[in-house]
Image 1 (tube, one colour):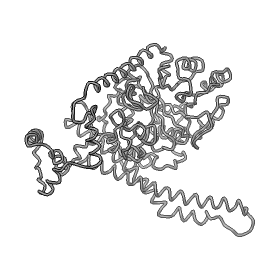
Image 2 (cartoon, helix red, strand yellow):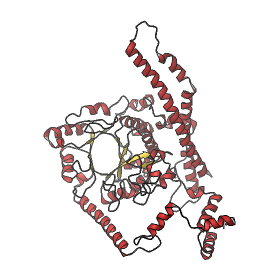
Image 3 (cartoon, rainbow, N blue to C red):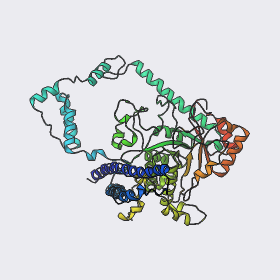
Length: 557
């Protein structure tokens, strides 16, 4: 019942967030309209002309700030953050009670990233599932199924439909979808209704051989890379193909893509994250999964990730036959492989909620932070907000020359306009933190292992920006970087710039060396446009001092 309560609270959280978004749009819209009117009016008529005109904002903005809309936003904000705390507390309590009462041998648990759907199934659901399964079975199979069901659980009664309904159910389905399935089933190479023939088996062998050859190639390549350079190589979206295929390499941003790279000896992998509607951090590069979905006609594949719940995400199968992994799934695999397996996480622009959710995840599971080497984004505001949030959660990890003034100044930092992305810390008085030692972690964490905050880096472009959030910097002049990375209360660790051919020239090399002496620097490139080979990596690492270099590991590597 407690798991059902958690699911209900998550549904309520989604509803409150939708309501808040509507209120926020209306509030900000009214406020900006008033200010823009004043700005344009006085640009035409001038200020101090003696015409007796008053600022519209002097009369309307006080009304807005004292309205139900304004205070309703604040109430919703408090409710959302309180719900987050409550869900987290209930999930932890449920996990601990499961572990103390026996639990499973493998140490698995139901936390806020996994919901045991079988516990949420009602008796009515079981009846409907059993009836749907029993239709179409002969008498012997029905009796066999009933016997197997009785051995596991109680025997559920089979409701016999009326005679007229029985006749309708006994008729073959004639929908358009069924006609297509029957047509495909008659194909000589179809798996529907018959065993695969020799051609199908040979095709499977060919695909498996391709996959095995790719892994062998990767292992050979990694063995020949000097260790001094290997630690700077970043497998872009894991070991994958840039065409989004999954027939001879793992699918991009999939669990197998990262596990294959880490197991081969590549220390760093880059991934992209997005936030689902019920606040699960999932790996996704695009706004939706249409490009990677197995069934592109699926309604879920055409929805934005932010519009999907975790339950809907589970139902969305990708080309590799599984769903998109949660960030916590990937970090758990990294922990199992070893401390050298690390992620470089990219947060998509305009997704400050994902940045704050990432901060909450690392706060709840600090042991996972060992496997997060870099967090980066094109969104400068999100990165500075994340910096403030992480340092507020981990003040003991803030190294500021022994001064606490810097850490305490975060309490006075400007608040984000995305209230939903803000931390529940300012409302922590509403719920007492748990005094008990957390024993529900999936990960065996060595407390003696030294923790450190991930490096926070800004992504930039080298060409004319295509989007308003992108910041452009050329290797001929890196001076704008200082102003971007430093703010009043926060500072970023470095910058991730795009590769430019001028970096290979003496002038570009000197500018890049100067930048790497001051900040942590990473290099990214576009597949098919920028060089992606060991020679370029050797030059950037050994001669320019670059710390991170993205690669798609092409066959020409």
